[in-house]
Length: 565
Image 1: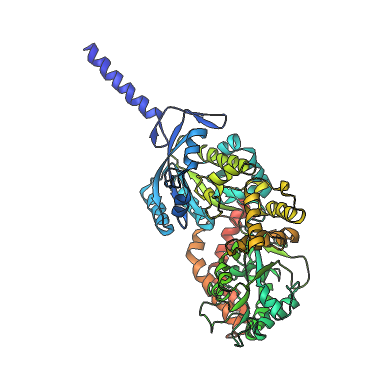
Image 2: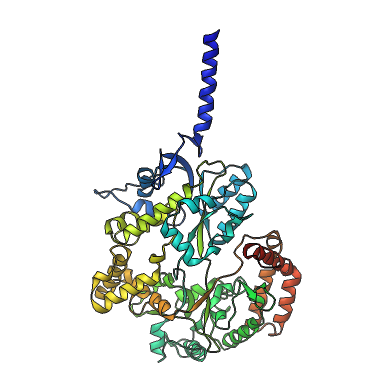
């Protein structure tokens, strides 16, 4: 009897031990973090969206014999995580379509079960989804993990950008997601303009509003493509999302469409698109459109939305705004006609004042840890791993080519890292300035061995051989490149003061009132309605739900900043 009882007690004790030792979805012994590494190693399940070129990036990596040696579940990043940081990563979701990944995330919330570590995708979707996970009690706070374990590079990035990087994932005073921090000018927007067209109409890059209008009219009226057909336009513009698709145009009038700005007199936040100055900007745009200088709805029914980009890529329009790396999209035009040339220029104010440019959020991806995982610091340790590698790659080309970019520069291996961020020293401004010095002086010792060297070699390759594949690198980082122009401009940036998830009122009203407002803007621009219709549009926006949304925004702002409602 005693022997049977002993066996039963032993079995109960073993079951209890297994329950205690289980963590992060896999059986393992209790682990602590020693010198930045889990010891003993832990196993976690994770979810990663292999969307876009994800599979191509995996397949691009080759072994010494030229054979692919990575799989989605097994890359140099996952091997490093296990070998150097004590984290064995078990890929639970292998999804290659963005829509399917979103469906999987939503279904996981419905079922109440997510992997231990989840990449929540990008930008506003990530912000909204983190809130959804928090509301479902599926994720845990990571404040203590950040404070105790985040590396100095990550903390430097937090200090550089500001504590608002955590606002979107802060609930009840606690942080529930680790952000991919965007430092400096890495998501800069510029005007891209056809330099060959400028040459053909004997104009130079505009430096003020009057010159800008003159150039746009010249592109429309002086046959810049030389085909003896009246088929060209100056400006291609996207008025989508209440004007937020063309921030730079409206920034020239001191307007920040789609963003929440502070009314200094009331201390309250207001929507940037409904400000009185928007009316002045629309009046100027209307004049340009009615004069034939704006890519027209007669060419493309979506010309004042996403179709504007098609206008430029088809060689019908000569100027639009987009990010500094958007010039890569124009490679096919360059291949078709070697005379095609684009150059960048930066923002100016219509009234001659100091320009302030709209800037995107200082965060991109968001990473969360399941509420069931017993190691909330796993996201922080994976982020530290990325920072360590990015720093090492600056001085070691072998590390650069193994983890960051392929040798030919076409595959971005860093996108496969479980966590990604940007260090203060890794922004485009610093890279561009070092490349400028090397090009001007011939002293290549100023370059860091990793990304600097790769970008510099691509720029030099184009300059020396005319290799079109590297043309866009020269347009971004050459002596006349977009990133240098942004660095030299040094203008002030504005980031929306509301960085939270969509509120219930936003979900109820925003889509309808935003669409109606956008349509109203377009009708003013194309001359279907009078300019004064704008005042009625603003009233309708507030009456249709904008008042409730504004109240939500100010309540959130008060909670985050301690401002008085």
